[in-house]
Length: 119
Figure 1 (cartoon, rainbow, N blue to C red):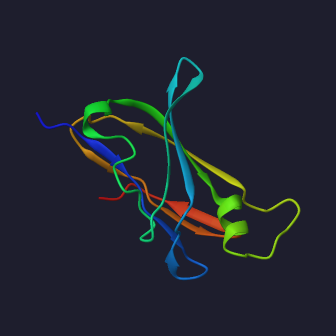
Figure 2: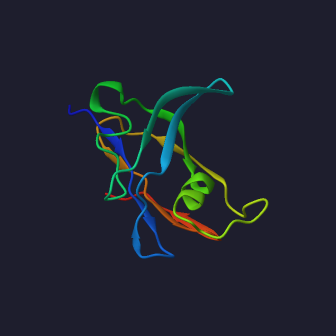
């Protein structure tokens, strides 16, 4: 059986561009605790240079991706608010098939976001 992996793609829908330089953290949820697994930034295409959770570390379970949207919006010069409407965007999801590719994209603007299970 093949081993799965986890990827993301962040698009800045307000600018119509990939969200470059956005920090992402990945946690595994175990017995009510958040166990840190990875921390990386998006590249110029809004993707990470490597899978967030590569084949060797991929397992069924519950996870949380944390997108640091506020810091990204500050870095690109989006007019500040105090506090920002969106700052840290957590997405909790489950992996049930350890042999599949899970793709969790984020469509982001200063005042909203959406996600889905992509391919």
